[in-house]
Image (cartoon, rainbow, N blue to C red; front, side, top):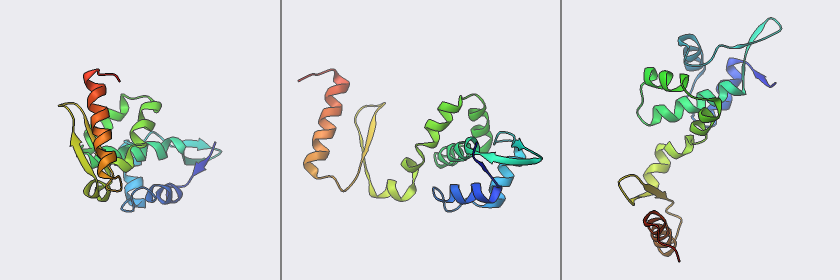
Length: 138
């Protein structure tokens, strides 16, 4: 089992969110939004599980969720579901959102496309997704 100090966890998380700091990691631990620390020997340590929780917390906070709502939501999820949320952290990067184009396909489906794609490729993606949602097949 990989273990980390609070400082090490902060440094790992800063790769995803440069605004994260040691004080915030300790605060999240104190208020219980993170699971209790693991006991290894006589030391309390963070693990990869805590890193996943922090990534999920950042992702959800970027969507406008309050810490109380995030804490409640995470308490009802499996570790696999928490990892899935954390894996979406870069989708909610403010810089990335500003430079990308979002296209509403239906009321329930929107896709975000990189500006690096050609207009032709963007149009094909939009048409393909629209056809799939309508149930059309070629």
